[in-house]
Length: 202
Ligand SMILES: NC(=O)c1ccc[n+]([C@@H]2O[C@H](COP(=O)([O-])OP(=O)(O)OC[C@H]3O[C@@H](n4cnc5c(N)ncnc54)[C@H](OP(=O)(O)O)[C@@H]3O)[C@@H](O)[C@H]2O)c1
Image (cartoon, rainbow, N blue to C red; front, side):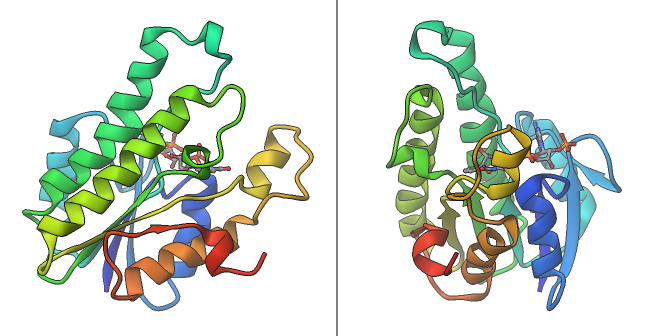
C-alpha cells in the first residue's frame, strides 16, 4: 500500500514511519521540513498536498496541536487552537482526502486517552479528543462501504514523558503505539477508536 503519514517527523510519527515502511510505501509528510509538507490548519495546504502526492491507499495522521493548561489559565484562543488545528485539521484531511483516496482506502486519525481519562489541565485536549472520537464513529457510517476510518487514541508515550521530565514507567514506547496504527491500516475495522493498551502488550 502507498500510505501518507502526516506528522512523520514527530515522536509517534517517526515510529509509525519505521513500522509501516516494513511492508508499505510510506510518503513522509512534515510540517515545515521534508519533500512533502502540510499545515493541517489550512484547507489550501491540505489540497496542495493531496494534489502533489499522486495516488494513495491510506492516510495516517499523527499531528495536531491542542493546549494543555490549568482551567483558570486557558483562554478562548487556547481552545480555538485545538479546534482549528487538531480537530478540524484532521476532519479536513478526511473531508478533502476522500476525493483523492483510492477505493477501499482508509484514514487513521489520532485522538488520545485524555478524552476518556481526563486529568487536571486537560480540558481543552479532552474536548478535542472526544470530538475526534465522535467524528470518526459517525463519519464511518457514511464513508462505508468504499472507505474506512478509525482513530488511534494513544496513552502517554514513554519518550514524550521523558522529554517532559515526567516519571515515564507508565508510558508506552512509541514503537508499541505505532502497532495500533498498523492494525488500523492493515485490518478491516472501521468506525473504531483504538486504545493501544488493549491491543498491544506494553
Ligand atoms: N506523545 C504523546 O504522549 C501523545 C499521547 C496521546 C496523544 N498524542 C497525540 O498524538 C499526536 C502526535 O503527538 P507527538 O507526541 O508525536 O507530537 P510531536 O512529537 O510534537 O510531533 C508532531 C508532528 O506534527 C507535525 N505538525 C505540527 N504542527 C503541524 C501542522 N500544523 N500541520 C501538520 N503537521 C504538523 C510536526 O511537524 P514539525 O516537526 O515540522 O513541527 C511533527 O511531525 C498529537 O495530536 C498528540 O496530541 C500524543
